[in-house]
Amino acid sequence: MKKRFSILLMGLGALALLSACSGAGNVKGGGSGSAEGNTAKGDTIKIGVDMELSGSVSAYGTQEKEGIQLAVDEINKAGGVLGKKIQLIEKDNKSDTAEAASVAANLTNSGVVAIVGPATSSAVKAILPNITKAAVPAITPSGTDDAITVSKGKVQPYVFRSCFQDSLQGVILARYAQNQLKAQKVAILGDNSSDYATGLTKAFKGEYKGTIASEENFTAGDKDFQAQLTKLKDSDFDALFIPGYYSEAGLIIKQAREMGITKPILGADGFSDPTLIEIAGAQNVSNVFYTSHFSAEAPATDKVAPFVEAFKAKYNAEPSSFHALSYDAVYMIKQAIEDAGEANSVKITKSLSKLKDFKGVTGTMTIDKDHNPEKDAVVIGMTDGKESSAEIVKPN
Image (cartoon, rainbow, N blue to C red; front, side):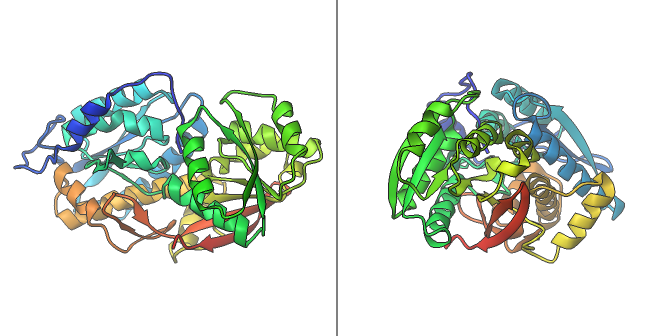
């Protein structure tokens, strides 16, 4: 998940330089961020949370914080990690890239050995220089931009994700349109101001074997899509692909249905928020399909049922894919600490890069050479605003 913000924080040259830093020298105990990493002291292990808890995409961050807290509560109740309890250091990056970078610096200086977050890809990119300098790994639950983990052909050494990346989502949606929906012609209405949307569009068009009947654009924050939808309505298409976030996608779905456009609508994980249904109106959210990382209706592993039960007991609600992804991110860090035998940030990073057959609630995953998880995806179908189908789709 990603969103473009107005402030550009880093030059590509600086990123390339920082990417070359391995941080794998002699590790010393660190109470503050340093190129030699941080090591937990005393009877606690500090894990940072750099999350969008307010601002334009806070719906994602607040969900992920809940998933993180549930995982930490479970781990601490069970005795912690290597006999130490996890202490969360939570910071709100306010859905702002500059703030996300500042939060990352603050967290690494506070002695955290790993960070969960941010939720959006632009914010994750913004923290790369600081976490690389401090040699502290971060796992983003929902930063899906391919360029997060690999920039200019170089793997970013200290960032990982528990979600799959945009290129995979675009491919899966293209295949779903062709094979399941039998769509020979697809129209696209995408956000041209977002790396997220443009990346999805590129991947979709690269995989789709049918015809792109029409392509229109909008900008994040737009409210009226009548002009674009009128153009699309006059074209001949079998499905409408909307690469974008729930805020605009909800309005597009509402306006499209009210105009009499009844064709299937496709989207990516940006649709995965209840707010989309609130904006669109449940009666309009039928024949809508989107890629997701998790569904209780299509259990990826035997960990799903206990997770859903525990989540309902704690929050009295159904868990979303964002809850599940952040929950998995915490347990990935736990596994990495145990594999390393020590809560040291550099050693945790090495363990994360070698994580294999990790069984999470979003699937069984192995971290590949580019720090992305290899796992299955889910395509969820909606009828009257409710999940009516869930199909596991293998990426290969």
